[in-house]
Image: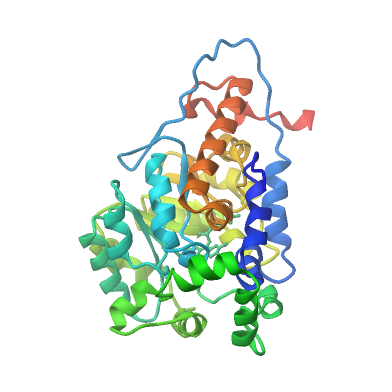
Amino acid sequence: MIISAPTDYREAARRRLPPFLFHYIDGGAYAERTLRRNVEDFADIALRQRVLGGVGEVDLTTRLFDETLNLPVVLAPVGLTGMYARRGEVQAARAAASRGVPFTLSTVSVCPISEVAPAIDRPMWFQLYVLRDRGFMKDALERAKAAGVRTLVFTVDMPVPGARYRDAHSGMSGPNAEIRRMIQAMTHPLWAWDVGLRGTPHDLGNVSAYRGRATGLADYIGWLADNFDPSISWKDLQWIRDFWDGPMIIKGILDPEDARDAVRFGADGVVVSNHGGRQLDGVLSSARALPAIAEAVKGELTILADSGIRNGLDVVRAIALGADAVMIGRAFVYALAAGGEAGVANLLDLFAREMRVAMTLTGAKRIADLGPSSLASERQL
Ligand code: FNR
């Protein structure tokens, strides 16, 4: 299949993956309205074309937490990434490092911290969920620290898992799930050979490292469901703030009040996110939530945004709306599933190319030049 746009990777991933995996990535919660709006609301934002400003060469680099990024994009934490390509976390991390951007390892990755961190020559970021098992959390933080992780992404929008109805239809869960997954794997031989056979162990690497025994895909949903903690509040996070001396980013902020609480708590950053429309369907899209949050806390901490970023133009839009940088989830997972490390590297190149064109035509030479003035004014829309 010919890949010319970043969004081409979705179809390529759909062809390659057994349906239960494709739909696990592609789907969202309930009727998937927020998922659709995430994408549409970014796409609908009109940029302001400015010409003959003598922009010249565009500089996409940016600084976040004492780190230089070649473009303002971070790979978001995505659970089970090692099921979409062989040792997928390692491949994605290598691609990110080769393009000078951070990779974030999920709590529920297939490859453990100890496999991914040494495979790259820049510090990866690590994402932790709030879980009942505080022993696990402490152990994971210690392992991350020992592996050279400095930036911690703390995800707070999953006190309970959202209902993802597609999973029951696709065979990810529901009746006869195991046999259905087996049949799907057999009918997708490229994936079955590359990941099913050669990509083992299909473990939750960080969880089994803690438990001292293998934990397979079947454990995944049960372990998560048992371990989420709906009673969590800001004061329960204090020990983590005290323990973690590097940058701590709170992921899953959608409201200015919560963003102000994050500042009071002492967070170094927030990710404006609705978890890619996978949690509470019907909440605001990130594109619509972002401006008010930026107005409330811009300059007091670093603002990242995700949920709905599909190409380089969306990155420019998010930064114009007030983000310092973005995270991408599905966009990189589709590319990873379709093309492994080279696919993700190519995706980042396509993002960079699109950003350069968009910045030239909006008259922005540097990332810092992007802002509300890069957008068409309300009355023109
Ligand atoms: C996620 N996301 C996620 N977030 C997190 O903090 N820890 C995790 O383990 C996961 N796992 C996960 C799996 C899959 C399949 C998806 C699609 C997403 C959310 C992710 O970090 C990010 O917030 C969204 O993916 C952003 O939305 P887009 O870019 O996918 O639209």
